[in-house]
Length: 370
Image 1: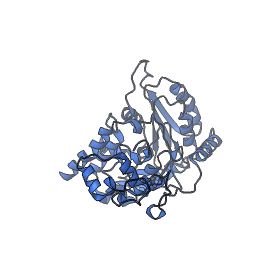
Image 2: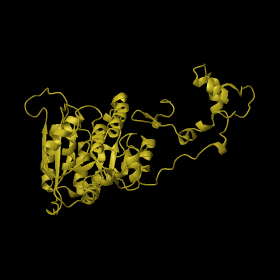
Image 3: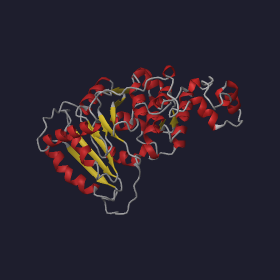
Image 4: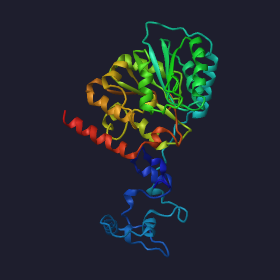
């Protein structure tokens, strides 16, 4: 399954859909029990029959050739169009690469130009954990300068044990941000003299960045992601209307299509879906989170272990009532707030699957005892 349709596996959660089968030119899983059209030289019994499927489920041998016959071989036989669903359509919007280039252009145009700051608006701290981020941090910080939000803005960066040029890059950006009237506070685990301090992990770095920040509102930005210009403005508006919410934002995967099924699922959820799918995985994705500092403090910060976002998500919902609108998302696939970069080494790609599978049932048990 991973070799053929890897995009239907999302954070340790298998999601096989008719669309996934259709995209590869094979018949729907729901039709496996129907006998396939007879073909010369091939059997039409075995696992293609209901009895054959029952035998397989009981643990008896299920010949791979017979299973392939029931699915159909797209290279040998055209698919039966009546049995296929059309592949999901992607919105016709600019590519993630072109959006990133436009943000970089806007950031460069704004550099050195003081922002018009309205002190009556909430102060927002952008929380940026960084580990060996010299290759991407320029793009993330340039997107700060491109923001349309006119309230007080602060960048709080914690360098978590980097061994590349991350510190030098951060120090070069501090005066550039301040020239645009964006406050900046930065520190690092190796900045105090311990040149060999180990990285504490992403939860550790986020907690340190929050602790040194001063905004009444927090917006999280991973060092390898890029904010679209209205990200902060729109999330502040949502929090003004619903201050106890954890507010996510619509996002585009970068590079385009890297996790197409996950992206489509995440953006298919309306506000009710954000609540109803909570035991599946985080229904608002961490790189887009914004919340009041009071919400962060009420949870107690991130657990400094893998899958810290999933654990925080459920700890927040443990305390929330549905009537308080605990989960919101702003933006759309056509108008995203963030370019969410994916690489094979991304933390969400390397978290132990057992952790991802154990957290939702544990949360379900806690809610049941309330």
